[in-house]
Amino acid sequence: MLIRRPTDILPSEITPRAIYLSRRQWMAGAAGLTLAAAALPKGLEAAPLSAAKSPFSTDEKKTSREDVTSYNNYYEFGTGKEDPAAKAGSLKNSPWTVKVDGMVGKPAEFAIEDLIRSSALEERIYRMRCVEGWSMVIPWVGFPLADLIKRVEPLGSAKYVAFETAYRPEEMPGVQSMFPVLDWPYVEGLRLDEAMNPLAILAVGLYGETLPNQNGAPIRLVVPWKYGFKGIKSITRISFVDKQPETSWNKQAPSEYGFFANVNPSVDHPRWSQATERRIGEGGLFVKRRPTLMFNGYAEQVASLYAGMDLRKLY
Image (cartoon, rainbow, N blue to C red; front, top):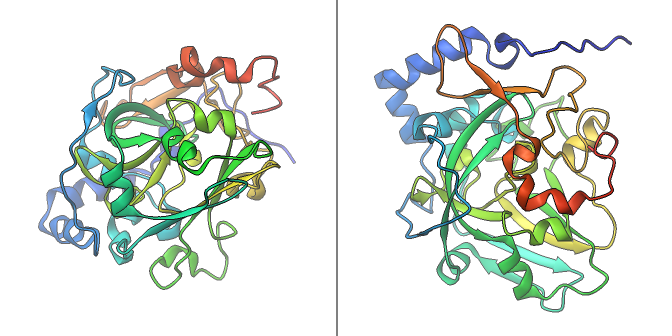
C-alpha cells in the first residue's frame, strides 16, 4: 500500500473550508450563542479559579478563548472540530471522582472539589501542538501531576502511569456509533519519570475559569512536549503499573501514533509532515505556517528523559 508523504500538509486536510466557515458563522450568530450556552458544564458550573503565575509559562500570544473552546478534538462527542462545543453539554461533571490505584502505598478516590481545594493552582501558558499539524497557546490552570503522585506514594515496582477517560454512552454521543473510531474508553499512559516532570500538569481550568466540558472537564492531563492526543480528558482513573500500558491511538494505528508521541519535526506522520504547523487564529486566506520546535520548544526541560533513545523508532 502506498502512503503519501508530502513535504507539507495542505490546510484543507486539517480544516475543511465548509467547517471553517460554518464555525465562524456559528460564533457570530444568535444560534452560536444558544450552542455555547448548551455547552456549559452541567453540575459543576463555570467558576473563576485563583492561580499563581508560573515561570514555566511562554510569553507567546495566547490563542483566543473562543478558538480554544470551539476548535478541538474530543471524539467521544464526534469527529468534527466543532462537535465537542456543540454536544459536550450532555456530560454531567458533578459529582466527579478520580480513582488512583495500582502499585501505590496509599490508593485513594478523590472528589474533584477536594483536589482543586487542596492543590496550589498555577496558570501555565503552554504551547499545544496537535499531531494534525495545528497548534495553540493555551493558559491552563492546574497543578503538577507530581504533586498527586507523591500523595499516593508509588511503590518501587511502579514504572508507568495509566489514565482512563469517563465512559458514558448515554452522555457521549460519539461512543454510540456502530463503527466506533476507537476502542472505548479512551486510555493513555506515561512513563513514571515523564509523569514526575515539572511540566506535566493536571488541568482543571483555562482562561482563569473551570474547564468547559469540551476541553476535558473537570480534569485532564497536559503534557506540552507531546502531541495533543496524549492529553487525556475527563479523567476518572489513574493507575500505577509495572508494564507499558496500552494507549488508545497506539492500539488503533501503531504505525502512526507511538506511545511516546513527543513532538518531533524530523519524524513525519505517515500522511503529513511534522516540520511545520498552523497556529489557530493566525492568518486568513493565506494561512501562515511556522517551524515546529523539537519537543514543542520544551527540550531544555525534557530532553534528558530520552537520552540514548532512538526517537525515530520510539516516536
